[in-house]
Length: 431
Image (cartoon, rainbow, N blue to C red; front, side, top):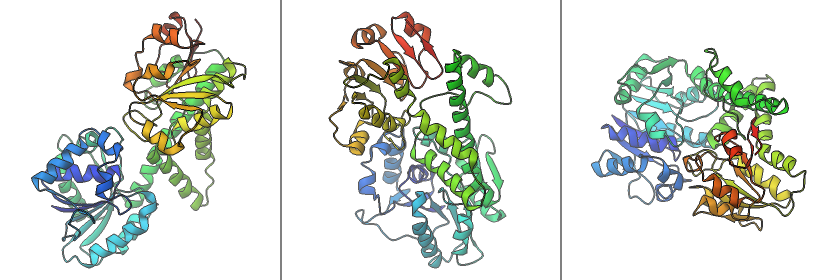
């Protein structure tokens, strides 16, 4: 098929690479706010496994053409599919492109809305189309940063919002190469698909926040929350997924999807008490490690030094959008704490976001470099390189031998047996 992909999001880059890799003829037009010349230098794209390699291979093979003001190619041909994967604030540009493509298209066209726009947007796109053979469908973005290629090419499901049988057949054919092991399409009306995407993230956030509330209760009752998590997960009605307590979730897509769901509820006239509480809990949890540090030192924090491992909102990305570390830094600096930070990928993003700060030292080379002269260590992002540290070395380096584990990746008894004080989320152990 002939496909136009529009946008500069992870979803658009992945769609362009994956669809062209299986023989579709793809024209990818990055959004003008982030053209290809800038996009190809983006660190988040470079770190996404396999993605850049497949983009380059498809360009060389002739199945992918990347259009833009500096590429020499700007004119779109007629297409079978227009795939829209844009940021939530780019809806007006999406509508303009739909109208433009439809006006010069004589062939049937399926517009695939792969963006997280307000519920009902896909129907609005269809109103911009020219004739009965042009249809808009919703195919919500279900990708995960750090696993985008794997999720797209080996999907557990496709959530298709479509009332038109011929359009559904066209979408199935488009994605047939990624749907061979079993039929992974779940078809429903367009508005239902748009709302389902938001509802899924709302449910996941609710599970995380509920587990964080239980971790706080476990702390106050001197209960190890890991026993509670395992007991809850063993119940088949609940399961283990998204039951790991931590120091708060972040991420641009996840956070803005929750805000979008809150906006949908507000616009419908229904108060969003539960979702508001979920968001409040998450923001509160971002200060959890600070409060544990405060309690350990009885509020005497000025002049102390803390090492932080991990600043990205999750492992495998350079992004710090809504990351817990940002809230944590504000709290530490307000108390005059010097912070030494290490992250395998995201220090440049942090430096660009906060700029130079007299109480911040970036340590890009070695996690242990961040611990030099530190009183305590805070684990904020669970990169694999942090999972098995040299505890003897850490004990010698940390002045107060205090480890604050924001992701509960360490065994409290093991850490304590090495002579360190351990404080996790709903878990604790003394030397």
